[in-house]
Image (cartoon, rainbow, N blue to C red; front, top):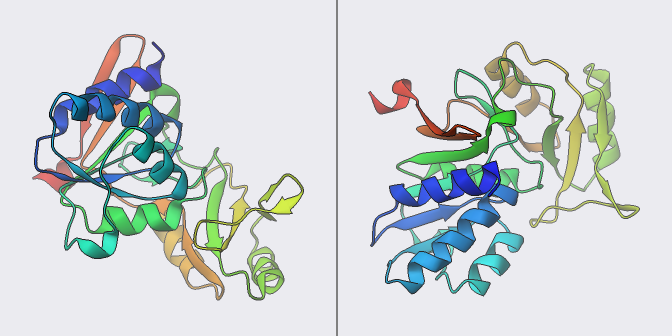
Length: 226
């Protein structure tokens, strides 16, 4: 069992019957969905709100009941992965291209838990490219604005075609190397016309489950739980 599987199994302990669960996107969440499906077979009663088409497809294959985000007022608990997490509980997400939907789900959740392996825990964000979701209309001008602002920005491609999010938007990746002030950068990028959202999640998780060879460490965000 690898670290992602170990962390995903630990996450099951935080789920109670009757919950509405936000379901993130990514390889770690895929392991979690499989385990969740097993618990549903044993009688666990939950309803999921999916953050992507890929998560929806996998959840349905495990017979996890789903409803639309527009059918709920709030979500009890959202479980998601992250590409990087720092000691201040800021993170980079969006490697899978679902950052906008993931952020919308997180914003209406009573509690957010991130599931990561130890390689994702960093002192400073930025080694992982920072994804931005931009509108397709005028995307070349948005790219130009980003470059004029000093960013090393590239349009995400897949199989020779422009990658599109589930919402039909484009993804731009910024090579940052180091993000000294995540909140400041988040606000700066949001002011650029054409940018819908960026992959900086500021002080979002209540708990981070970090899996390593020694087991799973639970990091509690006291600024959110106190």
